[in-house]
Length: 396
Image (cartoon, rainbow, N blue to C red; front, side):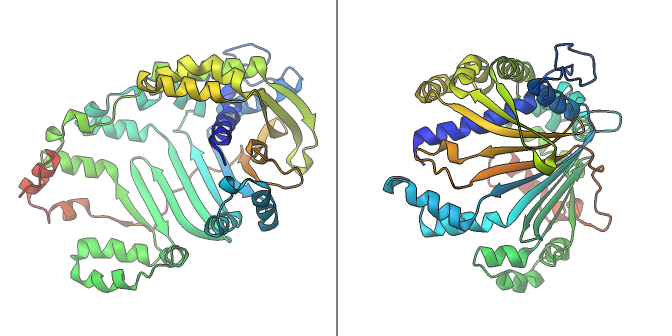
């Protein structure tokens, strides 16, 4: 894929997200312009139906998503054969893509009690000073517990390769280490043989992971332990990620939402068992140009020239993706990637599909996880070594 195609692909993913932003990035309101009503309402037009569906998701507290790649080995070979020599992928890359076809990523999100996803957008902790949070465990605890809960699972051939859950500042992980090692053409036996040389406080959770069991890590307890060791006070300011200006982020989201609503063309299509279908067509370069200043405001002036040059190089080409709505609820988004190729193949499928469950159950945390003993691990490390590491030294 050439640079131009990569720019188009980036724009396509961004504009697909823009549909969601029209509901999730701005204040909730009706699709006919009654901003702030708090109830997603459609004006009956295709555009109104799509916008109202996303706004309805914005007003929810639980949602589930399944992301997968739609294609076949035959279609991948057909697409690859049609490209110029410089754009063809090799056998190893083709094999990797074909493996992805049998997999999917599932995600579930739950807002804190009494909150919606829209509330989380407005109350984002991104505008809190990162340094202040790290040096104030109580504030960090409040911030983490105010983020709701999230679960993700990477599935291959109906087998869970990796699972991740986070809630109230605790993360839970489980992995099929043997399967991952097999895919990576590695062997974990060497690691298992060395576990006996490690202290039990480390060896136990590692063994649980190798056995495919849940292991948990309390981030709040970790930060508190670091605070007790005096490490947090010695973290240099420059090592902390810069604070995100939430006002600039919101300005970009509002700009993108407004541009999408003004310029997108939405037509009805057959949605099959996914409900009503809508083909969304957007002028990528026009929208990108209209929001470029707000985008630069988010990422920083140092990237201004690169962003403007990339947008200038974008061809005057529309991008299309499909949205599905059933019983006024969003059920999916499908983005055809073939359209981004310099040499598209009309009779081949290569698409990213996102299925949406707007009525998903709340995220549940595992009840049998082995907790990592943070204090026990830190107890193995001399205090002066921790202080040395925090200050950028070796501690020796």
